[in-house]
Image (cartoon, rainbow, N blue to C red):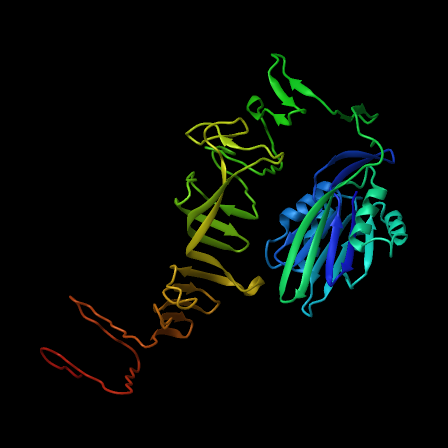
Length: 450
């Protein structure tokens, strides 16, 4: 469960959320833990909040694009995720700044078939939704005129804190007072619990399912298979068959084989191929795939930070061979790397839907214009274009193979057809030669007109 508050104050907009996770058993709410942030900032002017089932919210944030946020795309993603969880609710709130500079919040919820509803957030507007929100709003109404609005919201969260709402209070501030320069700030504070919380302990149900707070699982030889307290599953002691789906933050392998050496089916939202270089200043040639494009890139490592797993534990290579990742400290840290990329080639689909067609861009260019120094190959429905854009100016040198014929074009440059050891023949029903200035014939032996 979750609670969201939003507020308009001092020509800014604020969105508040908590980090508590809970579960319901036999109609009673139980505390599971704190630490899941249900609101995230995207780009430079948008905050998205998600409430409902925890794994559904996590999937939503993972699938949202980093750029080109579109309400209809958010709705599509939320709708598809909701279909996987029958009976559970899912709500999405999108706070942003519209084209006129106004703060707006868009709401879409499963109970309304994710219909997009929009409200303007003006100064002194305050609203809430989700678990305990009615109680929190009633409390807030008694504090108007006695406290600053932001403090009212903070006190309201403390007032209703229980198994469903609590943990950290995350506050996002959007400031568009200097539009189009928009800033987003994030801050957090602790929501103090006023009483002990109900927690799920080990119990078994009549349907045969069981839940445990602590469990160690071993085989008949006392080989450790799983330890719930340390959150470790010792995969090297298992033989796994028939994995329907695998979701991992980090996956590293020397050899991955499925079905006699082949991966039968691989679906990813993004893919980047990297070697194991990790020193600042190193250059790496890699392939990047995302959406409908492939890019061949040379990246220079400009920064590195030691990576952590989902529990905040530092990650290491097990040894100098860099073949296995571990949380046990070694002399070989595993890094998240920052690259300065130079794109050498890209291959993608131009356009959308059935009308899209393949296009390839080769070279880094010289930076004078977007295309100068680059070559472009594209294949629309009725032709094939091969074009080079001259350095410094971008002037084209083009060969067009079309249904109607072949065209060779040079914008401000020469066209030379040369054979050093054989004949050059031009044939056609009618041959037309047109010059805006001079036609020159030069033969070292003879002229033969038939």
